[in-house]
Amino acid sequence: AQTVTQSQPEMSVQEAETVTLSCTYDTSESDYYLFWYKQPPSRQMILVIRQEAYKQQNATENRFSVNFQKAAKSFSLKISDSQLGDAAMYFCAATLTQGGSEKLVFGKGTKLTVNP
Amino acid sequence: KAGVTQTPRYLIKTRGQQVTLSCSPISGHRSVSWYQQTPGQGLQFLFEYFSETQRNKGNFPGRFSGRQFSNSRSEMNVSTLELGDSALYLCASSLPLAALYNEQFFGPGTRLTVL
Image (cartoon, rainbow over all chains, first blue to last red; front, side):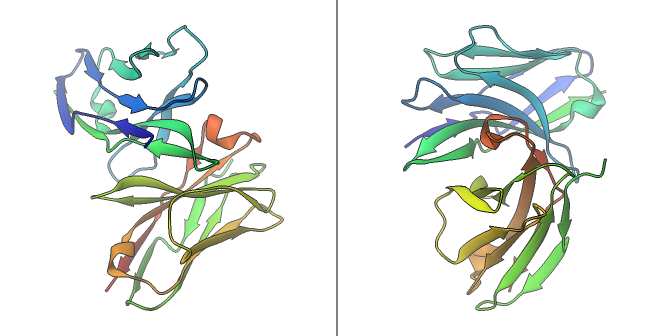
């Protein structure tokens, strides 16, 4: 089965420091899309960063960057200079094909706490 | 520009009933996707609509159905409700044709409780 796994249910980081959230996925496809979404408490889910699998270059959005290792099927998110507003659930997701239908498959999420 | 809106925000039903949830996408967005979020199973993809056609479907029983109207608004229906259907149902809209390859904009969700 094609899956997305986030092995860290919870993580914490001190304000201004760097934290890395892990994500691995399982697929036999060569081309797919990967995402990190953020869901703040009682607020709507928003896209943090997106990566196209055929692109070797790691995506970056301001303080957020990814380490995409295609052979290892790994897609980790690095948050630099952490801020209190970064506290949220972070979901890794992949667009995968299952049973002839495409779907966005999510990991179980990592709850990030930012300590002042 | 207004975001994705979902109605109602909260709903309480009893087993065996049916329910209809509504989603209005961002103006100009033609793709709408639905997701179920539960503590146990996490976020699971239900289906995706584009221009009134269901293009992709998740692994949910036939009790879960949806449709999209010509104005891109979408509804999701669950018939013969079970306790396990209690969840936060999220709707997301996207502008481009390849919605699942691109950024999706999520609504606040409808919290369904089945008693």
